[in-house]
Length: 384
Ligand code: NAD
Ligand code: USQ
Image 1 (cartoon, rainbow, N blue to C red):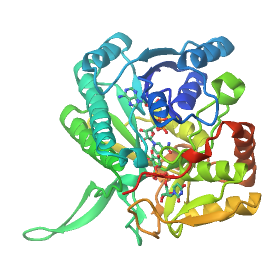
Image 2: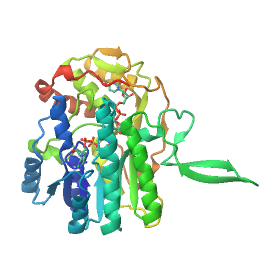
Image 3: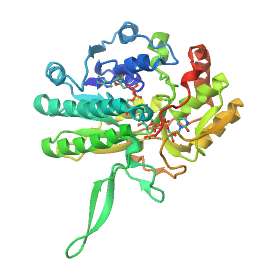
Image 4: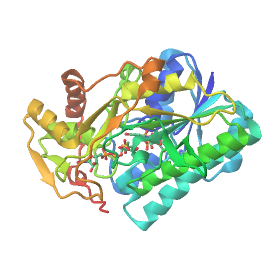
């Protein structure tokens, strides 16, 4: 298939582009490199020494004989150029990662709230709008988040996107399915909730074929393809805005920094390893909904853990100290989380679960680059 990967220079997008290319798909990456610019603004660097997009791509093409191509383009602010991409390449499918993805960054200031809303909503809308005009049979695969469901759901299994409800009619009760009511915990998560409405509208009004993957927190760093050469190395975020919890704990343990648990650590979240992320996208791309079907929503996660249990696990392996900090976020101190992920499992996902072996691999990578860490950037300074 001809596949355009929007946001293909990012943490999930780069290994996905390589995985799909390895499978024989024809890959074009679109990215405005805004994530790299945000690192410069924040004075942060990926812990791993990522190469420029040009070096990465030429390394892959040289090693494999494939031909990944690239356009530097802002999807949110250049509708005409997005149209040109669809006209010139006529893709069978696109994968859409091109959004500002950090909750703390989105809550940092009025400017970052504005940026996150404008960037994420316009990026998604420009892609959908362009597809309608130029390539209406193109399958859209979007990376959404488990966070749209919120964390006040104890007592039920979170379904895959739709909730069966029984409503009182004028004469009798009726059962129907509605989009699961969203309960986002940050401006970032709010934009993902708003994306869901854009998808529902375009699937209904224009018969677009759309898959929305509600992904949990991604952990790990390397995949089979990024390990082929150090020039292909994936990014590893550890700072207080972009670092996510499990990767942060592993990095903190490796450099002897007390593990930063927010509050009591009773927050339960969904997780997935980066190797499973790329596999899930392969599975989603190869099983599109039919034209006229509602948006296909799949929960892209493999296990749940509390923050506290992750800290204890990492501590027991490494001897790291655990530090219980005042929670900088407005979120429940404790929650339960049971998630239905049957769709991707039935398509063939074989989960890579958190094990000692995998944690060791990450610890080794992190130790190798530990001297690149600036410890003053570890605390979470975004508070809400
Ligand atoms: P990332 O920030 O590393 O990658 C996003 C990429 O999109 C970056 O390379 C950035 O430069 C690009 N981008 C952003 N806005 C753009 C625009 N207007 N035009 C062109 N390119 C643009 O993030 P990630 O961790 O790879 O996440 C990718 C997607 O997966 C996001 O949409 C995120 O919400 C979702 N997701 C990520 C995680 C996670 O744990 N990392 C979990 C669940 C869902
Ligand atoms: N946390 C800590 N200590 C830390 C960092 C985080 O205790 O040092 C806690 C947070 O308070 C929160 C939980 O860990 O309770 C998860 O935080 P996170 O930063 O790892 O993840 P989150 O903000 O939810 O966002 C990440 C990605 C986002 C994706 C989301 C999936 O950045 O793109 O959408 O995970 S999910 O959480 O399932 O919504």
